[in-house]
Image (cartoon, rainbow, N blue to C red):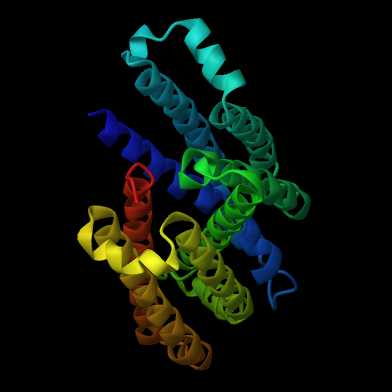
Length: 303
């Protein structure tokens, strides 16, 4: 039961914080100097941010309580104040939690200013949420590494999650921009979505390179390239292979979007091209959700 709760909290935190980072960063590179008024799009993307920040704040609080209860061998309702204070102030994971809560506090304030100051508040929200997301490295295998190797491992893990968050947030943003039209006035949004997809191509390539490079570092630190064959004899290995396969699927879908569906969307104004890229991006989102679920499980398993 405790493991199930921790897996659920880990999944929620990963998904929530990555969405905040990605949705906050998206307008900064994809919507700048677009042909047309992007005010409405900024507002659409901003709607969910205060809620996502609040969910992250609550999930993080529940997470530290569940971890404290697990380490002390008591129920969450039986946690004494001294237990909680000790966890928060005397352990690395507790100090990372404090940093996360402070960052999420800043993020909540910035999210509330997105509509009035989309650029400035967006930058602050991106940095604050990226800090909160990076703090999760102390809740996984990277926290066990020591010395210079540990520093490299945690830095790689943080960059890995931030790059993944930018990608995941872009997927969510495009699903919003490409939703089925309700009236003829939606056509300009589709045109801006096509421009945004073109701009994401370079950012997405950078995300893929960062994810692949840092993933290789993480793999070497946790499993080791020389022991890769041993994965076939453990649950950890099977789940990690499943994660690799889902990532490969996301790469294939991203390539399809970049080289075939995006040019078709820009060249045509029919619902057929929009429906095709919506389906592809929805499949990409499903694969991403599967990866996050596997990551949530892998984090509590022994390699």
